Length: 262
Figure 1 (cartoon, helix red, strand yellow):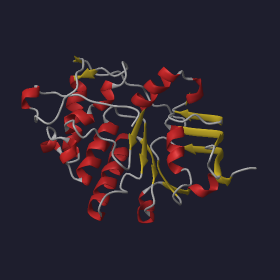
Figure 2 (cartoon, helix red, strand yellow):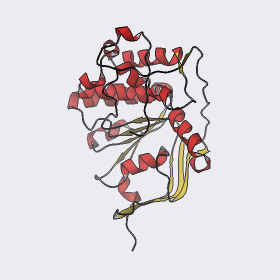
Figure 3 (cartoon, rainbow, N blue to C red):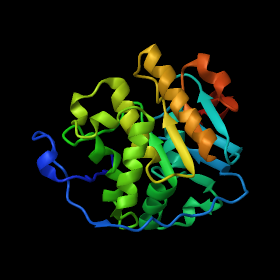
Figure 4 (cartoon, rainbow, N blue to C red):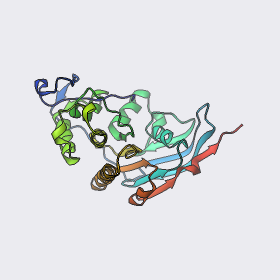
């Protein structure tokens, strides 16, 4: 994971000895919020991307996702779905074309501004969770406040982390190290972390791929319930065709997957 996060709201003497809390700055004000406009939350035009050794290229002439819409992208493994999420998040730059999130053209941002934008506006949920196992659940949820000056750890963040943990049923595990959690519990922590800053756009890469059927249904319901309540836009990569009917839209990614030229 390229970005790391962290924080803790209680004194460390109450922390488990095998969990190491990171240092940080704490303030009491509510973080500034940005108003979501009425335009498409995500708009892509003339996008092209290709890895040097790949046998395919991504080519997306025009693509958009409305504000407060849920979209499921499905397709065979290796077709570029995760690459697409990384392009949308600004982790990978496209070779050609534009990506706009909430009317912000990612190509116009400096590396520092792009990182700040990603941390404050885009939430990411990973299939393999991307938790720091030596940190507590609470510290993992608060990770976004540790990687940019744009997010200074405040009491608002701590209160929100506790509320999110309660919403997903892990409030009794805030002091437990992430390495001692079940798969379903780990994914709940990852979801709380992704939602900490109230992102406008939520990107989920196989968020239920490593879970048993019961946990899979619970986690998906948590995500869909959250975006419905808050008006967040969600783009999810999935192989689970049984869940496609729960999304506003479902799109087969193969239409953007072209054979390599030459």
